[in-house]
Length: 255
Image 1 (tube, rainbow, N blue to C red):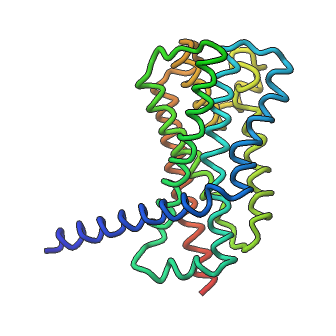
Image 2 (image 1 turned 180 degrees about the vertical axis):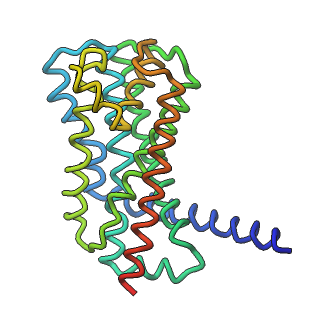
Image 3 (image 1 turned 135 degrees about the horizontal axis):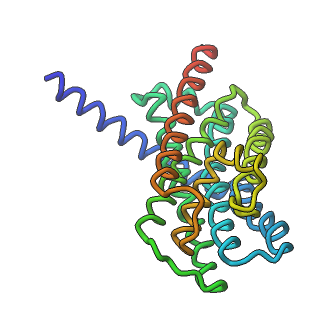
């Protein structure tokens, strides 16, 4: 009987997460800040810094796909919670039979779907204009999925401050995401980084995403693929656990 109740409760929470993800997709995918920070900004940013250096396709294409995946997956989460706090719908959601865990999981799913959908466009552009070829399709699919999960968990972590102003969360998000770009081997391959750069590169989950995509397309890598996958899963668990703890703490403060 107890197992049946637990299974029923788990299914209810999962349905709640899917409903929240659907709600986020319908409402927030078309919001101007999400479109700008998630789609337009990474493209123009990469064109400004990448094409000006005349990067090789083996650096350009993986970097563009990784950056698009990074920005899109992490752009939904930081905006959903402040907007809903401002509209007083956040508390309404928590009064339903949905836990904070399910609420955050729904936001993570929304970020994953958004990130994968947009990054596939960048990947197709790489096929068309730079003759990229997928040499390890399963690794590429798995790497992009785990990367999207990791960056989406980072997004909900950035949304944890108890504020109703999306602009404050956007500023925090920029302060965190921008430094990660420049230490991740996007513009400079990891093997060409100075010694100190190689020491700090593993601190960014984007490093492992770029390395997996580069190996999947051009068979060039710096880390073993299994190590990159394990590292991104570890980052995902860490980001989500910390986000859950902070959201629950701020919820208690608000009561």
